[in-house]
Image 1: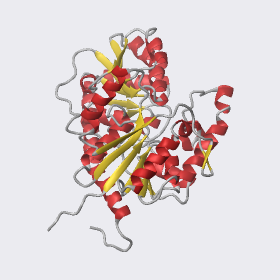
Image 2: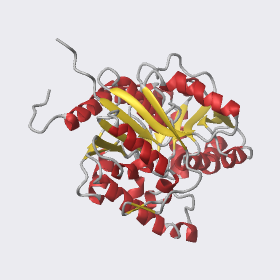
Image 3: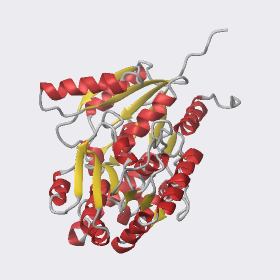
Length: 412
């Protein structure tokens, strides 16, 4: 008996999903886990390289990280300037305009027409406009963060005074865009139940499923206890403004309060691509180290006394917290960072808002090894219970099967 052909899924992304930031880790992990059920290809923009060395590095990373996961990889050059303000009757917000390209839309249509996709899965709201440009394949969109559903949850860089008020028209464009594109797809995937409810309020015609972000529980595992000293660790892809904002909040408002009462304390800001603003701010605060991009965050997590996540902007599940959970590192998080988690405050992590309360929660953990061990063990259990990539990938695979099933056909 012949084995049925695996359905083909074309992932449409704004950048190559090398697993170095939260959203890219999600895409890479889910596709990797589902490789035995589906054939994945990738259509994405080529990063803007400034020279031969940078192009060569992109190609090296492509083969190392992407080729084992994606059968075919198609690149389109990033547009030099913003796309149209209106596409097919749809007003595009600024971020979507930056990633709209007629060449990308044409390439997507050509690949679907050539039979390379039974499903097109667009990732991030940045790529949502492309759902109107083709037919002949099922359409899925992942909204990684529905923070923009609320004006105060939106993360414009102008966060106060008249600067933020001037962004109200852009926020309204974002809301209308999310509502309209939600109805363009056969299924919209979000990462939390609060985000599912938020999108349903915006777009009554959208069919929305919540599939959480997960963590590789075999890869993220604490082998040895942390060394002597007191180290607070934060992870982030810092060009993403909510991460830069959280790191600056740590530097300026929280860490000085901790260090005043615990002079041994150090703050490690690890992750990828720290911004110039962040690096300049860190130079003025004693006890702070910005690592720059690192190939592996596990050594920093493993040596952390406390993982800190004072995230003030955006929504969705924070993969950085899941990685800390998986490694048994005790966590202090803001209520916004913890809002989508299947985790209980006081049992699995500590939750605190405001610089003074957050610093108090950190110091409470620093001063109690018993509490640190208890929260670390419970956090690991929470990750095992709700955030194993294998379970979450199976749910996405079942969603794909549902979309491809002929009307009236029974579920397998």
